[in-house]
Image (cartoon, rainbow, N blue to C red):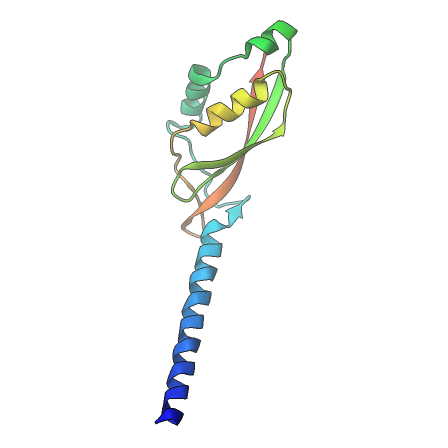
Length: 134
């Protein structure tokens, strides 16, 4: 009886390891971030909706106004497969509160229509230039 129990336990462990590896592989694919996709993510209202959202929510920092700072902040973020915006970070900043303000607005984005690759919704990295002009 003991000799029969070992193969069952080993088979069960091998089956468990197989399922564990498949789950990990599936999770890794869902967390992958794509730079190039077949269909780009779309903000609510399209590009005009994005421009409206930015103009209504972006504030020119008083410190930047006082110092006469102008320029372009480039923000990178990921549009997740569920449409949510995640991991915003500054790629190029100009300081005086402009970088923080651009991050604040990107963090407040409503959900987008996600990007697609091979017919599947995927995480997509985006870059957004935010221009400050007095």
